Length: 174
Image 1 (spheres, rainbow, N blue to C red):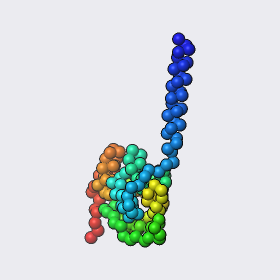
Image 2: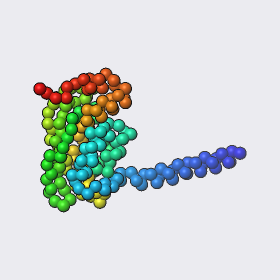
Image 3: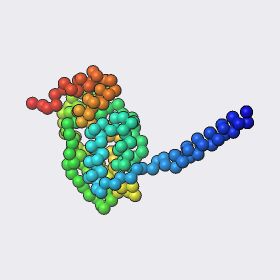
Image 4: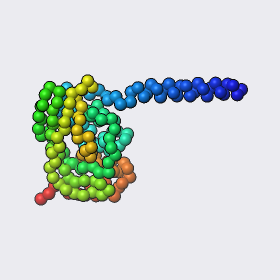
């Protein structure tokens, strides 16, 4: 009987090791981006970001097809926006562009909510790779999240007080 338990244990560990070995061959590989242009890539990334994909480890992987890095530094702040638009495209070559995104910022969530309406322009550097167009910078930009998506995220994390502050905060200046 002991011999059988030993055999089962060896087989189980071998199966686990084999599975781990198969998985590690994929680590560090970036998902394919099938979008045709640098602008489409930045827009797809910004749409996901605006809808709070970068705020959760459960949804963060949705941005992976569009970025050149495989991990994101954890942040303690997020920018609340009312919207964004592609403001300018500068093509450096057939495989490199800079796409400037103009954000309409309402404020910042960092422990609390600080209102601060302004326009923010962020240049995204994009390169064409074997895996499609990839954003190479900014790689340490805090999430830029639409107001409704931020409120929904905060409610989901049971931060009702902060969600309430955002819901009652003015979204325009007079």
